[in-house]
Length: 368
Image 1: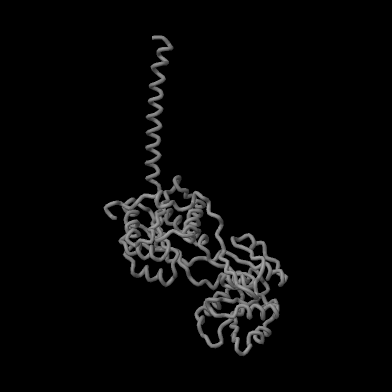
Image 2: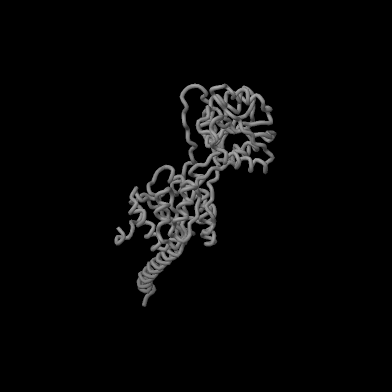
């Protein structure tokens, strides 16, 4: 047989072998992907807040070495405001071998916890009291998560970082309203550990006691913490104006008060909470016993700063604070309308966005 004819016979055979090898490699890759840890995520609806939670979660997972399609499988499904579908999704996830199920927002968390799940369930985007109730009434075996809770340590730590010479933090309270006493006790307990003293600042608009009381504090050694959880109806503008006249810095517990003239606040945001969720899920993937941990409070990590207020007070913003996630407001509106700006999470990478309902698998037909 000539060399030419031999080549003609060998070439088709080689092509066939290559095709078979490619098919086998593809099948092996698919099998390997099926063997990856499977993190299933659901929410009753999909909106900007849920997207930010999911993006933060996937970013944290990637940072921990869990990349979708490489070292983990991720799937996001919206229940489209349908409670029946929400329950079907959770059951489908478990049948399909989910390693961890993540339920974002209260309806989905309640529905998922009511199922007799054998896999760890992580809940998020709900209040502490609701989460405690869900945990008590759960049928799911293991429930943990990141929940919204009042944190009085973070604002005090921010004051310490911004103004290290401050030794007293005055918290405005309503003269005739004893609400917030538990919060004051919590703040006082934490303050002792960072060498701060908490004092209450009784405020009454009727008798003009704001200015007189503020004048008794020492400038440079005292800061005001205007916490709207403690004093929801606080006269924000009057307190800020009186504090500024007495050369006292005003910190806040919410971004709206910073827009209205307070120097700074540290707040929770959906993306930051998503980062916490991702770290918790990563711990569970590495060590399943981490699913037995108690519910964790969301950590305020987003700093809002009013540059106009800082400039008027002659405050130089520390580089450690500027390096954090957050935003800087360039002005303060003390008189006219009050814009209410929410801190925006960083633009999510497109690959991390939850798949649309058309791109994801439907629940098994027998469950519909």
